[in-house]
Length: 424
Figure: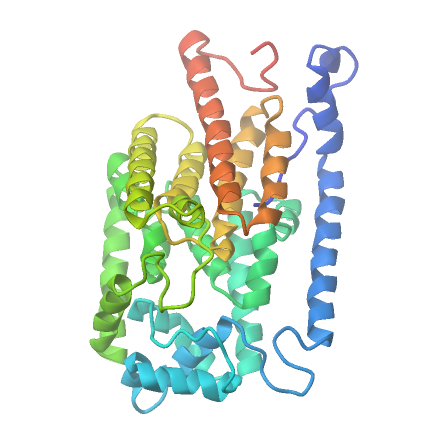
C-alpha cells in the first residue's frame, strides 16, 4: 500500500500552526512532498538491489547455469504458449499442462499446479506472451502490468510522487519476485473506479476485464446498482459477455468446464491439490492457520464478508465524495474473498490513493498519515494473515472517520471546509 501523504497547509506558519496539535505539526514536517519523494525513491532502490542480487545469484528468473528458475509466471507463459498452439484445448488437459511446465522448469519442480484454474478470459492476456520466448515474455508481462498499475495510481492522484510511492509496498516486491498478476488486478480495479463518475462506459470496460479474477469483482455490481450508475453497470456486463464469447470461440468451451471444476474441486484450505497449502491472507486464511475447522472458518468469514458488503452498499447509496466510496470498495474487495494472496494486496495501494485524494482536497485528519504509514509497514509481515486483516480494519476505521467527519460538517456547518480539521 503506497503512503502517498502530502502536506496540505503550505504557507501556514507561526500562529496558524500553533493552533494545531503538536502531533499534527510533526506529521506536516515528516510528510512533505519532497521528503516522500526521497523516502519512496530510497525504498524503490532497495527493491532494485534485492532483485538484482537474486538475479546474480541465480535465484530469480534464471539460474546461473542458464536454466529457467521456477516462478508463478511459468503458469501464465505455459497457458499462453499452449493457447497459440494448433490445439489450444491442451490447456485444459491436466497431463498436457503438467508436461509443459515440467519441460519448462525441469522434472524437480514443485509445487506444480497440474490444471488451468482461471476463467478462459485470462487466456486473452496470456496469449500474446506465449508468442515470445520465456524471458522476453516475463519482461513484457511485468512492464505492461506495472504500467497499468502505475497508470491507475496516476489517474487517481496526478502527481509524480504518487507513482514513486506506489512502488514501495511489499506486495510490489512479491509481484516482481513471482511474476504474478497483482499489478493487473490492482490496475483494473483502480482505473475502473477512477473513471466511474467521469467516464462510466470506460469504467465498465475495465471492470469487465476484471472478470479474469472474479473474486475481486464480487462487490462492484452491487455498488454500481446501489449508486444507480447504470451506464457503468451495462458497460461492465456487455464487456464481460463479449470477452466470454471471444474466449469460448478462440479456446473452446472446455475452458469454462475446467474453470468450474477447479473452482469447486479444492482442498478444505482452498488449495488446488493435496500437499500444497496456499498462504491465504484473508479472514478465512487466518482462521485456518490458527487451526479452526473449515466449517467455523467459513461461517466467520461469510459473516464478516456479508457485513462488509452491506456496509459498502450503504456507503455507495449516500451522497458522499466518490474517492471515499472507491476506497471503501477497494478495501471491501479484499475482505470479502477468502482466496487472497500477498501479491493481490496491491489493491490496498489503490484504496489508500483514494483516501489521500480526498484528503488533498479536504485536509488530513490528525494522525491519519501516521496510521497509513503503520499499515504500509505492516505489509512487510504479509506471511501472517492476521496482519492483513488488521490492516484492512485500520483502513476501514480511517475511512469511517473521514466519512463521519464529512457528514458532520454537512449537518452541523453547511459551509464547513474540511481544511485541517482544527478543533474537531
